[in-house]
Image (cartoon, rainbow, N blue to C red; front, top):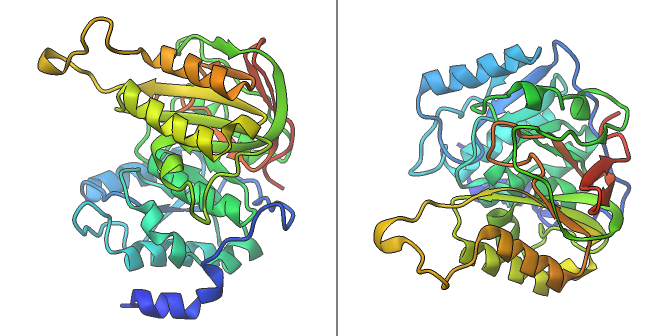
Length: 333
């Protein structure tokens, strides 16, 4: 087994990411029917072999050929194998010219532990379509820090609903997707702070994104349209993480969009006292007022059945009054 020391020694120059501003953004080739897509577990472990088969079947249903990572079934505590095993699977996929996409089976926790082990040279030589969300946000931010587009998308264990599949052209077409779809059965769209902004899309899971503030993989907030989601977090915790982003430069962003933030149910002794709590919507509205940038909530994005594919690293236009987010550039070639 390759040790962490050996991986770091072989790729020490790869550890510190390059700012996307320093080099032009690189786009992967659009996925085509029959392409090979690696199914990996960069974070939490698969439940069992049937869980991996479910993810492989999901890839086949999308028209691609699944290639299950050799360590995808490993378990190391709450991780899908050691850091070295999970990084080895990702690097093997990045180095294989036959692999055109990478899909995470699930989230959980652990992707940020391998960011210093990724072969970023291989990534930039031949960008692959990276798909996943939640904890996979750490990989998305690392790819963006190296100037490579990636895709917030359902994971292998996700439902890949009809709505989500309708947004596949984001990563299967070399044309700009245009205005992101509304989900009639999803959350209502609400303007929190009016205005129009244009910038580069960045975001993902708020807990992961805020945890990477102050690191070489931090989200580039200035001039960006920041799109956020989370699950199972109390309003005060979301308040704390958003306040952290305020201090980290969120007011310099071009705009802000909230997706789904389903909170943790609190009943009995944990139930909030009347008049001593905020709803999630109130937290968002207070944050939007402090940031003073165009902002709306309700985008079909996050831990929901109707999870819209979003490309990180391409330009978009946010109209908070019309409550629309329009992808202006192609995310693939």
